Image (cartoon, rainbow, N blue to C red; front, top):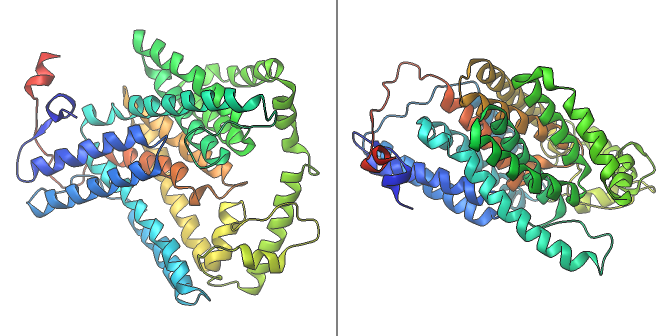
Length: 409
């Protein structure tokens, strides 16, 4: 990547390392929709570069928020549960995933410059389009042999694919709403294959998350167009193949195997919480524990409980649940303030960020989305962007220089 063309130069100590951190955020945005390995590589390199810039004398400029304390509370509750877990090493191995919280503050710092943050959504859409294209090719090859095949693409399963595509659609929809001219046409064209791919994953929880996220975007940016959402859902349902509409209507069928299995699993989870109420059982895989508590009406088994709040409470008890709720409250407060204060093109980023987080909560009522890195990283990115939009408190802004490549444009 030509940093002179893509990134502004930063004056002062640590400027070179900081530009690398900015470049890593842009790379992360592109690879996030199709590779968690490349995403984590970009995240780690970006954090190292940001730390190096700080060691070389560059001061951080992002605004402080309640999110820092809430995130520390979540980490502390997971470590407390791990200390008393029957499998502490395995639990600690799972706790390590919380290092990804750092993505919030990497983005908060690296994306304060508008020319950086306004490139993030186009890169997400480019990566998601690649995911959708590969998914379509695989789908065409397999659907003839397996009529029940659900689009999966480059990611590990249909659930993850659905979550990533839902978030990408929401980012694109919010940016489309504030764009003008040819840019709006480009965003609109990108949304069509992404929306079709999302439908073909047949992931009901992420359909619900995308629907609520779209409602958030309409409410924030175009409330008079709110009627278009139910109309779009109705028309899409009418035009969809029978198996897609059957999948959609199965959402409200308690006897559907997936629904029945979740209800049975949640009852088992509540039994575990009653037996381990305060600090939970630990953060390890919970399949063996579930087998001891499962009811006769179970239809499938899993190492997690297909609900963020039940899963976290089983793992970390009521202490962990309170910390997890505090993190949500801090995040929602940040998002609400940001969406009210954003102006211009940043309005699309703020609405998209809020919609992505809303989708995480809704889909997380039926799946452990907080434990799905490819999905939850979109929410960390969203929160980082909202911090990047806030004015700094008592910290001098970094002077940004326009490179020769920028002036040529």
